[in-house]
Length: 426
Image (cartoon, rainbow, N blue to C red):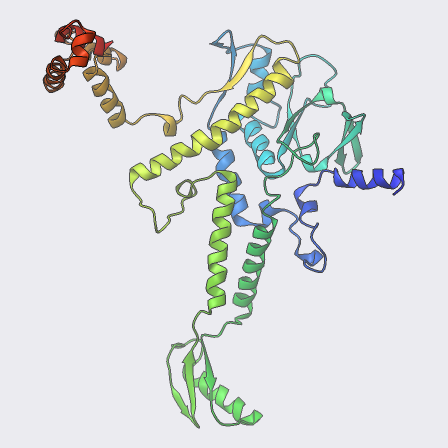
């Protein structure tokens, strides 16, 4: 193989494909071009639902600017992330960024046409599908953004690139749906098939069958007779015998149709798993799980802990490297999770934790009241003593006194119970 031909093939291998391009990579004999999925966010309902759930929750966490651990409420950086640009607010900024991340595995922030140098005054979220990288010597030296008037060149210094790991190209992200192309196409095919059947009324509720051979005019008369007695506007599910051995037999759901329903359910859970969304967060009730409040609350909490928070931390680190450190800023940015109800303790959980800490001697009652903003009690500074626990410990110490191993360690006797209780508390 010649060097030029080998280079062309290598470039083809490492070319970054958008989702719509990827969906057309299959063998054309196995998948017709008309069946390729150009935009799963538009054509697949659960892709749309999953991304909507994710970005809606990401928009709930406010992005704070801090300096030396204290929140900043004024200044150029604060104004940038608060105002963003004339057509976008700070909530929209993160929702659109996350939406492209979950669709294409990357997102681009552009500092605007009027940006020349220094700290930007505006931020615009670009469409990753319209971005093209110019790479030389393994480094992106320029980006091109496709518009109706042509491609617009953009320097890397004018961008912030949020990129998920891509094993095929180190310069671009990769869609998280890349391995779910078959599942998405199966659902779309199934939905189209059902829609055609409903539109054309092609699924009969029953059939007329006879053991006799009917001529065409006899079949027409039989059809008219049936419609006159059991037309569409009347009770269509009646069973009747119309003579000449003709009877009505109801049709049932075929095993193939049942398998199709099971496949759609499997594809749904595969998609939820890929996006890290528990079923209850998507308002799905599994017949094997309960509808208890604790189960629902735990799934919502897990959704934030294991899906949303890791992504927000990733965004924070990308911004720290590509924005705050790049421009030599003392400020830093982070998402405030203190007001997210799913991450807060319930009143019952907090009360139980306070009781355990009081019984363990870690807090007094007045310490707990002070944390809750309540006035202290006259007797609240006394350390709690649990008589049952003390008796249990005393019995344990007596048994240790009878044990030669402990006698040798303590010179024939154990320390006083009072000393041992103090050590337990500490």
